[in-house]
Picture: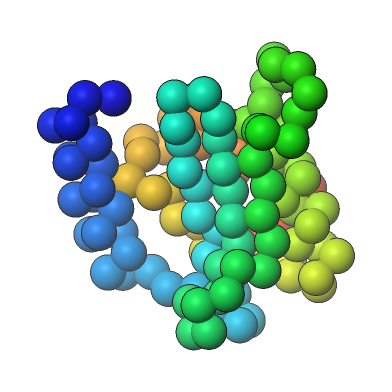
Length: 113
């Protein structure tokens, strides 16, 4: 991602974050993509704590659909903490491709947003 594209994404993310917040009842599911990996965190913004996290770094090999698996893992870990409902924060990324696949995987795993 070029510097200009990254600046645009950060501006979009700031706009999104001005509107959504994670609470204890409904924490925020945040997504971040690097060039190689995909990360997802469930965050309670009231306390500033990460409640659950998952990433594609956890896989030994390249998984064909890593985004789907990361979504399922984050949903499983959220379920262990008795978290059912979240607010989805796409991180300034367009809701297509890996971001949408991760969201679908999280929904398949039992999260509601």
